[in-house]
Length: 199
Image (cartoon, rainbow, N blue to C red; front, side):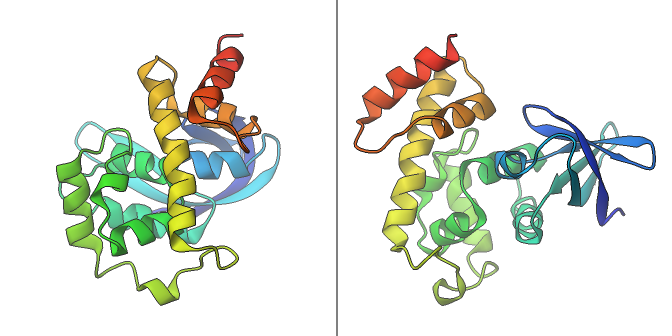
């Protein structure tokens, strides 16, 4: 198996990158979090996981070791394939996923596109003992857990609305990152996002 690939980011797609190493271009499926941290024409080391089935041979990769470790945990859950794993990691960062699982918050986890409440409950049940404990989680400058969750929750709600209107997850999240959301209602943010997306 390929543990990692080091090379130059030739292209960023909606949910993948093309990484060149020794004149070979590897298509690596990845999360929005990793995509947002990479730029084209820069060198990067991507930790990878090779998914092999009878009809599929695909590479999945992430910039941070903790992200690929969470991805591997997620796809051990029955019914969670690589695409669903990417969807979870594109909606929440690793620390937030751990918080959601440890707090047994199936409602927040079910806000991930493609993850229903039943599947969310299964993820929580199977991974609760495998993601550490609350006191081992880096909460980004000691922010309150509820604040971390609510910030991600609000954004994921808006992303879901934009996706129901026909926009994909990547372009929806990128658009929200370009908007100053401070002191704006959810409706105002959606209106502003739609103006940008329809240009």
